[in-house]
Length: 453
Ligand code: 5AD
Ligand code: SF4
Image (tube, rainbow, N blue to C red; front, side, top):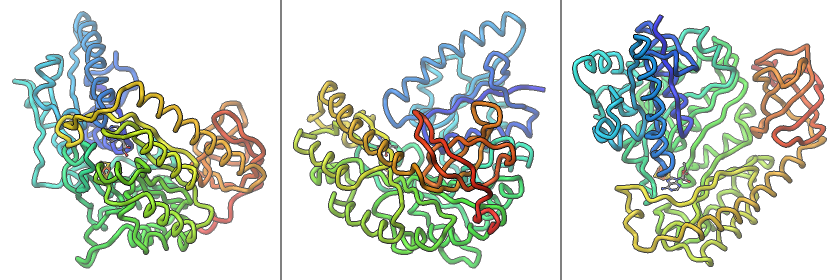
């Protein structure tokens, strides 16, 4: 049997896409391997969001070339595909810079992989079109066994692309305009995942809360309505969604956090910055105060909700005063975790052309200061859960025999001692202490939520 090695960089959608590519290729007789030296086909599923992420592709391609040459000495052929957002953004430039590459394929064309690979027998192939056919309709479903092997928590793409055009971001260019999958397709995929043993679904999209999919009767469904339907899928005990934009947090979606017990009390809602001047320059279309008031409304609906955000430091023109506004916002809101990035100019985006770029050393200093504050908030959030009883979805064996590891509703990793429960069980746990990477707890028994599913 031929073997394929897929390496993904960047966001969760790339993780999901990598699985879909493996599914397409399993129909062509490929099995997956985790060792690139054994692979007849190597796929790098790339990320273009920041310069560092994009540059990684070329260093990785250097290693792939060595593997290819080594395999060739043993009479083995290795074919190389670059997929993902760097493929979309750079196209044929990749085959020029790295002749080892046979196929360059953008995120909208994964369903065409078998065809592209056979065409690449004759000459290098670059496919970065936005095809008229929806790729989702042409991507095969994984078998139950494959799905099960990927774990009890699964990603499900419901929306792709973005129409927001934040001035720092390449996503609207690499992933294209917003597209929402039809509701019936999403429900089918959710049922198939649940039947294979999946208990938790994370709905993913670049702008997932802007979801506006076609409902079964031709009407448009928003994300809240989709979540309301998904809680009815037998076997599903948990729902999450990511990534959201503050402007698209509708009243109904906020109410869903109050009304749907299966919707987990954790929300990733990127704010990026706390200065109104910078937010306007970023084209975020909201102020810091509007974000704070939105958080108040969400907390009124679901008081125990944990929040996380993305932050960019050193956006062009960001002064020390602007940065202080970000720190103030962080103090006011309180986050359970967050991601931090130094602004990275991306070709083709408006902010990249600004002449007011911030020095690298200043960016590094602000990054460290912001990180330190949110790290304190993360620790105190984690310590705040000690003594509490939390549901934990068991995902895998723990580090030591007799231990199991899973996630709390707030996405915290939790370890428990248990021989009685297996992967996929939702159990009730009393949190006893905080370790460096996870919480520890004592098993109290099955969660009542599990019986309800
Ligand atoms: N530079 C730094 N960070 C960026 N992000 C997006 N574009 C850039 C950029 N040019 C960050 C944003 C976004 C996250 C996915 O990546 O914070 O929310
Ligand atoms: Fe990028 Fe802004 Fe769209 Fe998010 S909302 S994907 S940051 S353009």
